[in-house]
View 1 (cartoon, rainbow, N blue to C red):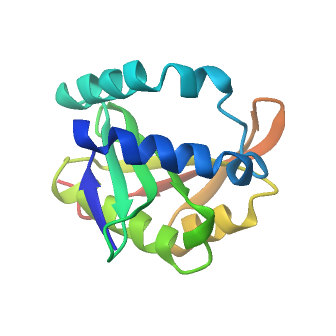
View 2 (cartoon, rainbow, N blue to C red):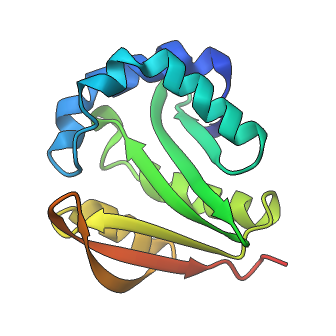
View 3 (tube, rainbow, N blue to C red):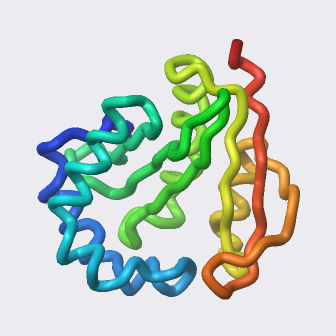
Length: 162
C-alpha cells in the first residue's frame, strides 16, 4: 500500500469509495449525510484549495493493484499541530492498513509538513480505531462528545519534528 497526496484525478475513485463504504462507516462513526455525496465535486475542489494553502494535507491510500482503499488526512494545521483523521474501506479492514497508513502520515507530518503534534478523536465503541492510535503512540487525553456519541480525544507528540 502507498499514500498519495490528494489530487484532482482522485475524485471519481474517492466518490466510489465513499459510496461503497457509507453503511460500513456509519456503524462506527457519524454518517456524512446525503449532502456530502450531492456536493462531492465542489467539496473535492474545496479540499484541494485548502491543501494548496497548507491548512490541510489530504491523502488517499492505494493498494498494490492501484485501488483506492482508504484515506488519511491532517486537517486544521496551525501552530505546528493538526488533527488526524482516517477511513479504511471494509474490504481492507483488519489487514493492518490503518496502522501502516497512520504510521506513514505521522512520519510525513514531522518530516515533510514540519508538525510537532497531532490529535485524533474516535467514538468509544470504535475499538479498532483506538487500537490503531495506540499502536502509533497516541495517548488518550480526554473524554469528549462526537455528534451526540461518547468519544475520546488522543494526542501524539511527534518526536522527529523540529
